[in-house]
Image 1: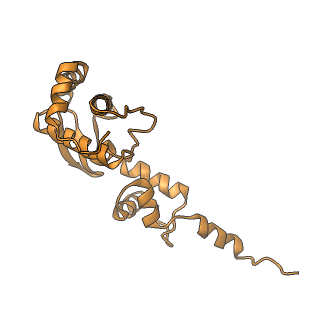
Image 2: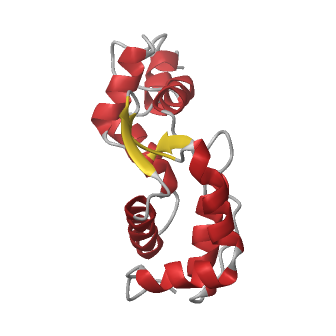
Image 3: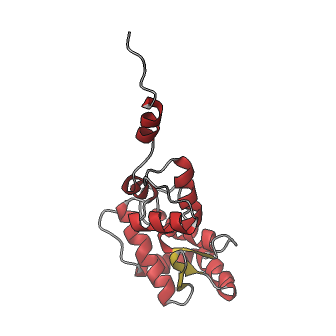
Length: 175
């Protein structure tokens, strides 16, 4: 009968941990940002293997949010585009969304929807509704308090919203 290796439990723990690149893919960020967040939180493990507590620490420290979980988005245009814009603007007009990492706006969406939403954010910045600022967490978008009411009005008025959708170049395969 063979006895278990006393180090086998620590080997199993290593298998359950993520490499930095795996955690980065899971969180949809660059591996450098994983390291930066862990260093800032003074939580960088010596072996660079991350357990769930490390990954959660990165998520919190880096300000990562999932804006699109649980949001039902229609499949066809133009309802799809309107819903993306309405949801984006609703999130931005909440106190939590008043300033957020730019990539939070797109995390969790498929490529065509990301493409459209990036163009929409660029248009909202160009129109003066949103500002882009650099923060310690990275490039961020902010909704100044004095523009919140105007952005809410934009998304509440079907004609204004349709006009905005019409000027944003959409991907060929969005719907």
